[in-house]
Image 1 (cartoon, rainbow, N blue to C red):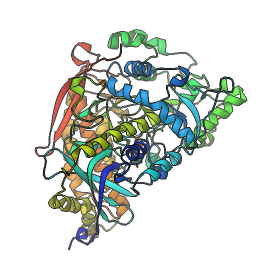
Image 2 (image 1 turned 180 degrees about the vertical axis):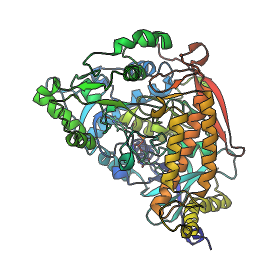
Image 3 (image 1 turned 90 degrees about the vertical axis):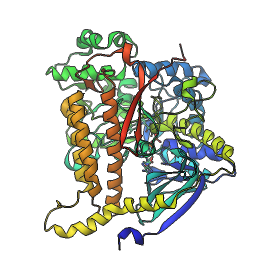
Image 4 (image 1 turned 30 degrees about the vertical axis):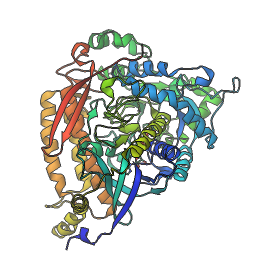
Length: 614
Ligand SMILES: Cc1cc2nc3c(=O)[nH]c(=O)nc-3n(C[C@H](O)[C@H](O)[C@H](O)COP(=O)(O)OP(=O)(O)OC[C@H]3O[C@@H](n4cnc5c(N)ncnc54)[C@H](O)[C@@H]3O)c2cc1C
């Protein structure tokens, strides 16, 4: 008898099911209750929402706050900013929608107890930069989670969602999700009228700079395992801009963030010989991207580009000049606190490497690429826009509904709206939930039905890696290499190597071309076949197995998108060596993909970019 047949199945019914209790998920859960007083609202999370997601460790700044109450910025300004940073390609309707609602979210955080820093002279929130405000944010996530917990009918922690379920009565409509409890091994079938996917971005699809046991230290959270993309992709949701991966300039070895250093401490970078270097690359960058290099602020990818070119020219390492700022005891405190509130590892790395930034200018490096929809890139699902301002082609139903009926998303999940960050992800969760409640109300008695065959088949598939291990383990006499199964870590390393070498990771200087991508896809195909033989020795490894499968699907999507866009739109994030220039004539457009689960084929298309803000 197979292991899976002994496992309990738990059924959970809901009107609105929120998958992932991070910033967007907490926003969605909170808002669903506001509009759906009598609805059954369930949040399911693979960790524990108290400390889950990219904000788990805390943050030192809220990166998106307009300050409309003081007329500091208007939503239109933020759209212009994000559009400029993304080299022209953003969904302006989605960005505008978030920007007009984000301030009220931040005010709620303060009401709920988040300590905000205030400028002693003006009494306003302390600005770090034009968009960022500073917080004492170690407990940011627990504070936000408390609001979601109180709003939810029930939060299910420690359940990894592996698949979405589709309605058996109406094609193309979502009906729920399945997953397993990572502690008890129970199988869960969540039946829902509307589903909101808020399962975070993707780290560890590319080979990280960290190696060996340090591998868990990456910039984006190592537990961000691409479920936000894999779940919708597998049920045929269209994705957008999946080629738009992000590479970050960060302090070396600890991936410590540089925002507070640049913006608040006013530190700056220099090459190994103590010289400013960005101007060296102005002319050559202009040849590649034209006038975009003259835009202010200089787009993030182009600043990375200068960093990479200077390093390739042999004048690295690039350093952050901290010695001057750290003479000021207040700035020195801010510099350290910035890490202690959100990236403790960077402070530990500096201590272990004898780096005191008062005396030594620390090295910077560029990270491996990540896929995400909430930072300075906007990969993710293609979503319907707000009724009052989205162009007709971007509207096919409810706000933030994907191209699958009843399936919504927010935060890293949704593409096209860069620079949401923590506050914008929460705001987008609220926006999606309001629309999802409307959707639920409009369905009336026409409720989706799950198919018993579908979830029973999935139950078998979900636990298969445990079965593979149990059967195959006796073939091993020593070590961990088996002739009949592959461990999740081995599969992950193979995926990262393929992506690194063929799809523009650190090892290939972020550079790729059509032959490399073609071969990369072949290798990813073979990996997919081999993942049928994943072996998991326990429930923890079973979670790793499913995270890997989700990462693989997202990686395939990234590779297809990178192949489709025949230009180098974001030098500094990645380079198509066979199409080395930005090409506004042919590629001032979005790239969309749809995976057909029957045939296993990916269909690519272009979608127009509408500029609704002048
Ligand atoms: C290092 C770092 C620094 C940052 N700095 C800042 C900053 O200074 N200021 C700022 O405003 N923003 C910052 N951000 C950005 C901010 O954290 C993100 O924009 C935000 O967390 C995205 O929200 P989200 O809900 O989409 O994802 P997350 O908050 O990551 O939440 C995703 C949730 O889904 C869960 N999940 C994933 N897969 C599954 C699954 N299969 N089943 C069930 N649950 C699942 C995860 O456990 C997690 O709880 C930073 C991010 C990082 C990583």
